[in-house]
Amino acid sequence: MNQSWIDPVILSLGPLQVRWYSLMYVIGYVVGGLILKYLANKKFWPLGKEEIDKYITSLIIGMFLGARLFYVFFYNWDYYSENLLDIFSVWKGGLSFHGAVVGMCLATWRFARKHQLHFFQIADCMAVAGTPGLLFGRLGNFINGELYGRVTSSWVGIVFPEGGPFPRHPSQLYEGLLEGVVLFIILFAVHKRQRFYGVASAVFLLGYGVFRFLIEFFREPDSQLGYYFGLFTMGQILCFVMILGSFVMLMFARKIGIRNPLIPRSY
Image (cartoon, rainbow, N blue to C red; front, side):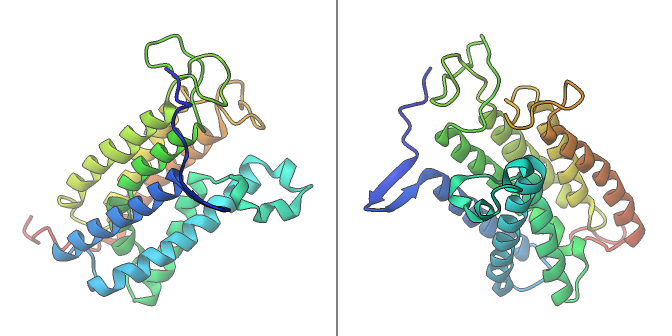
């Protein structure tokens, strides 16, 4: 099967292009905003609905800065160290999801502090509401024909325009389903049953770390990095850090003990 028939550009108006990838991000944030409003109705979001748009704006800024800086320093510093001005050439691509998580966490910490709340009270909402966006982001990668998988002879193989003549795993779709659908279902169930804030955030780190670590065995590694220790990719190393961080976060959440308003105290 060849994916080259999918045009990544939806509409062109002179030099202006509307691309599927950008649209997927917009859809992801719209869906996330709707989920946050649902959480507000259920009293899990600790602020008024009028604060949701402000929070999403801060998330977008944090995500973009974190994703770009992580890619520059962790994935391609050899190039950018000699071409510093290209750090600002974001239209050429180059974003890291792990960096996006760090950027959104910093934005969440700042937002929570501004409203005199604990980080976990906002971060749990972000974990639940933001996870479906991973599905739309990976669909954008798939349409762009980027971040494709390794060569395969199985029936799922797709010949990507930039991936050479051989069929490859559609690893973007694997990630979208596991990280954006399965993980969301898990988190949605967890947030209604967790006794303390912080559990959903820890489960997100653990779930994403495990799913991404496994899928990386099907995904083509970054050409400029290759493998570490002859087997693991940079993405897997960062996922291992996320998995360790999830256990630290869970222990910290239990120690802090900020109760979930959805769970009665007698529970």
